[in-house]
Length: 96
Image (cartoon, rainbow, N blue to C red; front, side):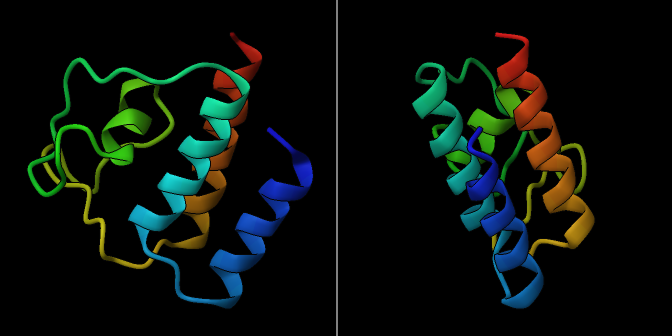
């Protein structure tokens, strides 16, 4: 993942309210640019569609829900959640 893009995402999440849905969408878009399209085979979240970027992120271990069955897409992302998602995205890409 492009380091400058990762820094931009973190700064955006710190300075401006960013929803969890918007953040994971940007992360998944970058991951798919560098690897391949992520195919969702199962998704535990009941508050997003089964083909959402939240489910794609869950599928490859980039994100987890706020509970076993919810993602809370409209809630603003917390700083530590942003750092975790970016770290896991980097780990996913380095293991490919």
